[in-house]
Image 1: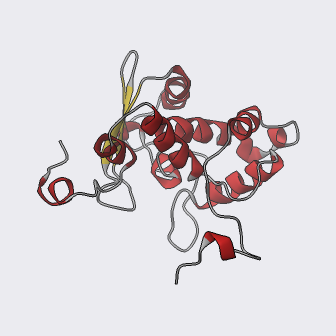
Image 2: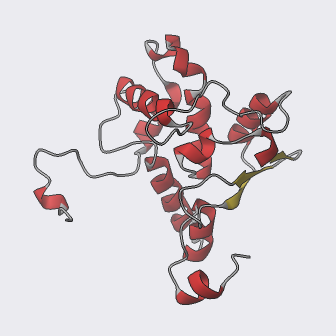
Image 3: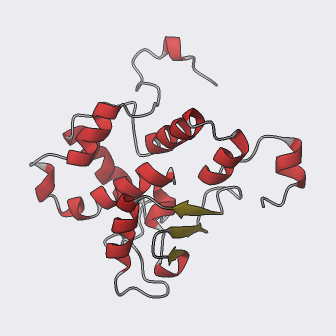
Amino acid sequence: HKISKQSNKGRSPPKRSYTDAELLRLLNGNEQVKGWPTYSYLPDLLILGMFTGAREDELCSLTAETVEMGRSHAILNITDSKTKAGIRFVAITHTAPLGVLKRRLKGLKGTAQVFPELTRGGLDKKLSASAVKAYGRYRRACEVPDGTDFHSYRRNVITVLETAAVGQVPIARFVGHTVGTLAGDTYSEGG
């Protein structure tokens, strides 16, 4: 059953994008959070989510062999995705996520995890199991209200791309959604 947003009484608020002020609070963190053991990887995960719109588990599952680093770019080969459309390449050119990747990939080879702090957990044994919970605590400690979560970065990325007049097909392919047309979903090879 689908619940309309107007009659959402007593339930968590509808999911939404982050505001600019909320993004700044998340980027700056707070002193209480900076002492947490999980803090070391959360800011890096946040930066990658903010610039790629990738799902949390897609980022947590990255290995050295799934990231191609160039001098001024990186290409993420997302191979562990919840949907077939989610298997894709994501190009990165901004210095913030490039810095995160360069630092995290230093000395890594092959199947070494980009986020070695993470271990598989939960019923589905995903690498993101502990990161999902840690991120929720982090978000609340930064006083960013419910209605937002890690998936909100996807909403932000899509909104930024739409505002920049990027077409719906390139946006869908960038974030790993189906294209939504017969030609795109049935006949296209995704090139």
